[in-house]
Image (cartoon, rainbow, N blue to C red; front, top):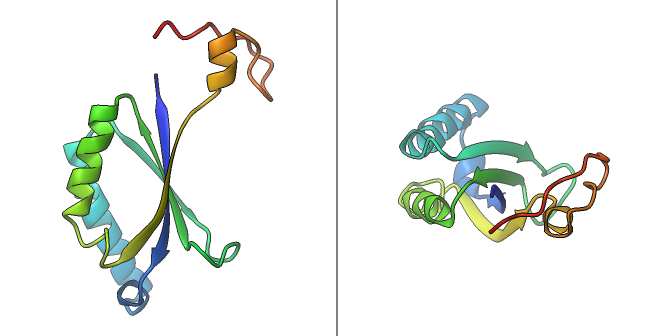
Length: 119
């Protein structure tokens, strides 16, 4: 079952001191290296600073196992992304349509029926 993990992060002064081009290169290098080590993990990246004063960015990770997620976090913690360029404010793990999968009812918003999760 695919799990989705949201990292709510706040950029640090070290991040903001870089030019946009430097930030882009750093993001591609740091996150790219981690993602290459974990090809089973997918990442979506959202800017939030215009809408939220507590977090500047939201990272949405999709993983198929908790082991893959834990390995990702351990590798990410060894990079400057975690703690130097961004402070991780909150981590939220969720299961998409968990209610509908559990009860075998139509998905919220899509009307497509789902089958109960066997595990």
